[in-house]
Image (cartoon, rainbow, N blue to C red):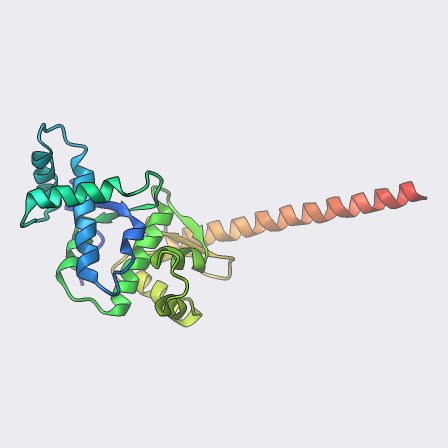
Length: 232
């Protein structure tokens, strides 16, 4: 099966949908609406980089670049502008390859496939421009469901079985996710580094942490001994 993540043409042309990860909220209930909102936001946001004089012309140029068609372009401009202006400046963003966006926009997805999509976006938002990230399960889940910890889906995927199934799919499917092997506090995840490299980083940090912990224990022991000597 051809990868839906690795698309050289889109990456070379910078066809990336950038949007706040919280816009994924509600995707399980109404995928079409959420994908539409993301399209409006991303196209308008991209259009602000253009040097064209007309706002409509800038939007049309951005829509063509990201390969999005709007039936009512003037209305789309206004809606995209409203979405961008109503979003806080300091928000958690994710950059989504255009091919993934269109694949999800145009085809039916099961609950599990949507969960994989949300987990992928959540992890990408954590990694950003870094080579890897160390993150706990709850850190991923909170961005997947945007802190809706009371929802049934959040509770479902917070169980070890369903969460491990999710992460494993991102590894063995066409998402190119890599994670460390062996026991560690949290997950070391990357779309660039290999499993071996991540495992080496995890083990190295564990050793460093143990050395630091040992030094602290010895320091406390020395302080106790010094107090006993002074007391005598």
